[in-house]
Length: 257
Ligand SMILES: C[S@@+](CC[C@H](N)C(=O)[O-])C[C@H]1O[C@@H](n2cnc3c(N)ncnc32)[C@H](O)[C@@H]1O
Image (cartoon, rainbow, N blue to C red; front, side, top):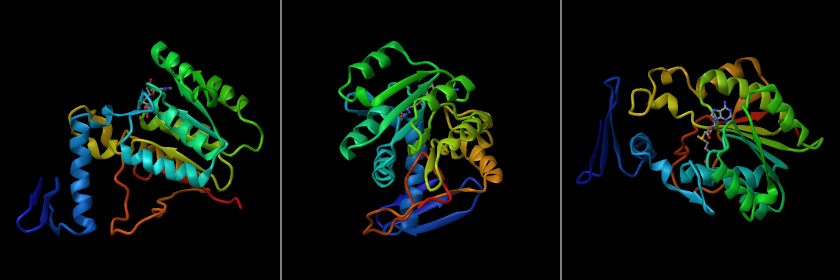
């Protein structure tokens, strides 16, 4: 339970495990407590299903899109490979940032690309930057088709946003991390599921069956990757952690220049 005491300028929290804390409103701790409640409440009311990017529905928190823009600006990938197309908004988002940067193509993979989405993506001004592949993102044939589209030496940034079970994300990590050159990174979306177990629209197994568990499984045997929580490129405030659906979601491969 979270109490916002405006008169005292204080945030008080009683956590599910019974522990309590009180924070002054002007602290990073207060902001984090309010943000955690905001994320949970936003999940319950499906806030994330209320945005478009250049005309296409995008199922991402606006702050996650801003952080992705920062990542794309820094990484400047030649190819973004995103699993999970849905309405196509995130593909259009990546393509638009790549267009502004002046480089980068997008490969979008989904097991079910609906005709309205396919047609809207094909008709979009950013369509020349985007290639769609229909298929299970972890299937061998799909991965072969992705590889065939990637020129040798290309810097690839995979973004995993399809099925979010532990087994599927792990299978995706095993497949798509092989596309990441030393020094590059891979993004795993929706680790928030672990914190949403018990919420409406969650499943009883989300406490363990989630992308964070897949990340841990993957990192246990792929020691050349680590979780990266990069500093904000601009930060004149006191907050140091992202408000995100994808905690611990950037995995960096060691090496490179
Ligand atoms: C969360 S949505 C993607 C949202 C999109 N990236 C965006 O930001 O707007 C998940 C998508 O993953 C697809 N999906 C689920 N399991 C999949 C699988 N095993 N292989 C490929 N796509 C899958 C679903 O069809 C759905 O369109």
